[in-house]
Length: 160
Image (cartoon, rainbow, N blue to C red; front, side, top):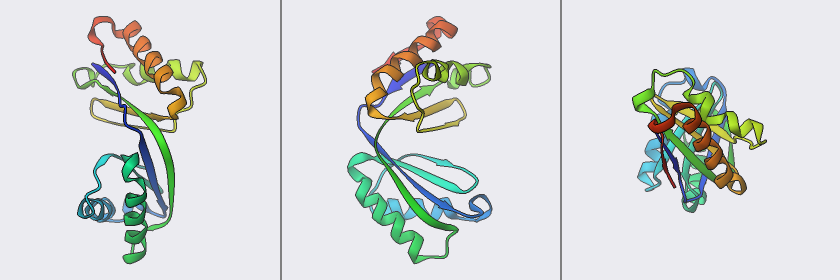
């Protein structure tokens, strides 16, 4: 398992709408537009009524304009676009422990105890990503690493 702190700031652009999960092609529609504009996606998170794109902070304005234009230019389920600027990202790569209970809990339990707000959290098989305010990035990283090491000991590698 590896805990990694990303040093570059990121931005989250969240498109809100109705029936997002049952609208075919929404991810393709937006990701193609970002790709065609040379905006790299770090990650995508989806919810019942939203789709969040995580991009480099330096690409925030470009990504916002591309997504906004994509929402206007085609029939989509989306009606609002919100930016959360200049955030920090920490990932836990636990593919070797994907079927081990307690990884997610150990990753974030220390944050709650120290009142560190999680701006966004998402996961895929063997990977957990949290987004926090940059003022708490170092503290959050240390708390997550310590909590995971306490539970899983030598199986945890830390990468700053």
